[in-house]
Image (cartoon, rainbow, N blue to C red; front, side):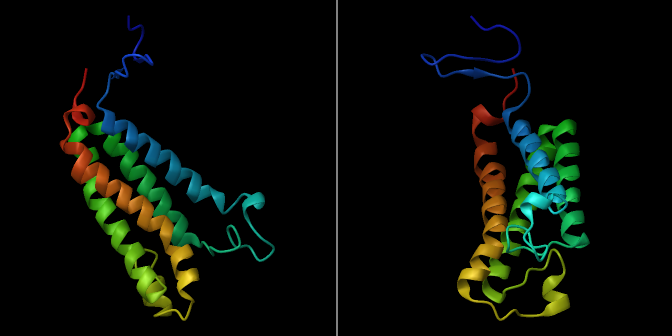
Length: 158
């Protein structure tokens, strides 16, 4: 029998949660974005030149973008399921497009690097590595917002 707010059995793979399941994805996204916003200040993640993982040169615009993204989804998740779905659809589409544009031209638009530096002369591998996080994060958000939000299991409340 279920006890507390959440229960799980291996035999009856039912998960009963007290809040809409999609809102939990929102809290995970918020935690991820807050972590990314602060990763650039943790020396263990930086190389000798100050690049995150030796690849990303995060500046104040990147950190503000990540922090704002985390605050937006945190507020949406606390507010309502409708706001959470709106975040995943709008944010996911914008973030995915940012990654795809960055993959093609080497710089993306959300951090203004496309406007500041123009088209980058990087190899396809570097363009891919620089932009795959936005493609994956945005693409996953789009799947959550456009697809999973239509599934009864993910948008119901118990």
